[in-house]
Length: 398
Image (cartoon, rainbow, N blue to C red; front, side, top):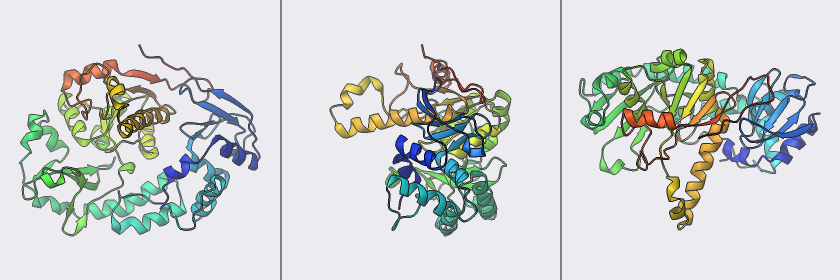
């Protein structure tokens, strides 16, 4: 199985230039983007049939940005657009086309979603990917198929221990009122903390569990499996806490992106329900998640993922090649995510440089005061300027 991310890694500057030349838009010029410090390749705006040279390809994030009409497009969306791929043609006109350009054989491969969807929907979703990469249509598909499925199983909550909450989370600073607000339950029989996930409209779309069983130490957070069903959902098509915090996010035009659900709950407690924190439930930010925040007219995003490594130990990491490679990949991934977000928002990176957190901590794990310090220390990585402007400002940290 080939993943789209794997395919995208094979796309080089020369591949892009060749594709653009083939479609009637030879390279016009190059520059360095002031906002992201990425190399930019400039082309004619063939995405909407224009003739100005205001279509930019960012060589590191591999996104296109049309400064006259279309805005940001990921690489696959752009290819779909210029090849006029219609319903049922995404696989043949986009995936196969890109694979040929990068020299990748798809004879025994297919595009996959990985392991984050339930078996019942895997076949349908594979077909959906072949038909269209359009994010809005995929979201409609999920809502039509998945929301009804999970709404039918709300009776599942009758199995759980009502008005009982895990003391360990209370001791960590999560209030009972926050757990009630987010629908957190306790399942004594399995020693599970039950974490329902709702979409932006408040529909139940998935249920995850945090296991306290020793045998689950390496898979603490997993989809809940009960009554013969796995209550899974595509994490990249939702943001945990967005439904509960959307009014705060719209009011303050700000969002703080973290990894885990527990951080969202802590923030809700710290700020008495006036939090702007949402969780991706993984070390990633998807296109759908970016667009969801764009629709709420967010201006500023703080990126605050878990502290997996500490820069002050870089020399120590170098003694272990595997560890050092993981350290480099971690920092490269943070940089790439910040660059993608910078196409839409002012981006601040929350990174502990003062030793306030332990390894594996989230920015909220040491309490409200430390979190506020980390927010103040957050480095302004990029400033998002006017979409119509081809220039931007790079904000340097202190």
